[in-house]
Image 1 (tube, helix red, strand yellow):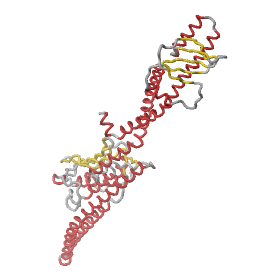
Image 2 (cartoon, one colour):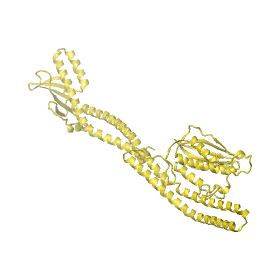
Image 3 (cartoon, helix red, strand yellow):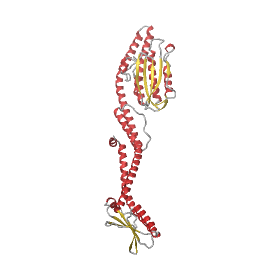
Image 4 (cartoon, helix red, strand yellow):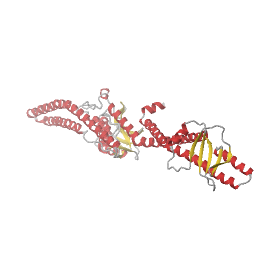
Length: 469
């Protein structure tokens, strides 16, 4: 699982690269620090030897001198110390080894930088033999102090130091890697993942708008990539929609041409009859002529509205949906039915519920749905039939589903398959069937949709999906 995360995820590779680079930097820094540690370790022994030399010269008691020397040898690992005076060596403590290789180190030489070669040789070389360390003596009359220290002690100290530095470096590398990983995760990785997901969704179906979120206001390359992707989607969708509408209009023109020919033929026939028939039939002929002309005007108007409905881009804003639905219902239902045939309207949407939508587009959606429902219920023959139109809201994830319920006679089975197809009318003679097609386009433009929930002899339910604010 971890190998898969590292091999496939950019964030995992970034984490490992950060840890590796920090460890490499710590390794480069370790070389001079190890040389400095070696020099400080030897200087510390030399300073303690100088303090011991001062103590021994000031303490004539043998037992006290023995206690000091034993403590010094345990703390510093020095096996022998002598003092140089007038070219002669004065033995002070310990005893020289019987046979040992000696490596000379003179701490009296002043150097700004430690010897890296000596540190490397001590760390990786043989631990056999002893170090013969020459250091300045603080005791008056003594020229220098000479110390014998086993090489193995210094090598062990340097390797222990290396272990501690390695653990500390690894901790620093992991912490640094995690911090850089978290920073890159929110600054680069997450936006790139969203872009990749958006590209996959767009490739799957470019015409479905799954997200209406505009690009962020970032000024860097990620922000530029988001804006370019957003503009590309808008352009491609506009091209697809224009191509679809042009194809649909091409089919529509043939139908409109045929229908208008019939309308004009009817008008011509009525005009001839008006000229030749008796006076009492003039009113009927005039009514028929008016209906034919009105039908032609309505047909032409709906086709023009359909061809222009997709030109305006949705202007998303926070909308109090209950007020908007009530406004659309008041403007639509007032002209349908009076008395016993009056349509009652019930708005069950909470007044405080808000959505992200285009106010004008959403108004048109509910206006079309309410008009269709009112027309369906107006055709019910009984004067005392129940004519109710109810609207309620149901939360559905990051969307809100608005249910529009009527008590009409329902839709015929043949109308369900072509419900949202242009010029496949479901409401009977004189309609083009463009109302639901336009409404669905407007809903999808806002990141929502319209679906037929159910229909029967007891009524029909449409569901309008809108994004939560």
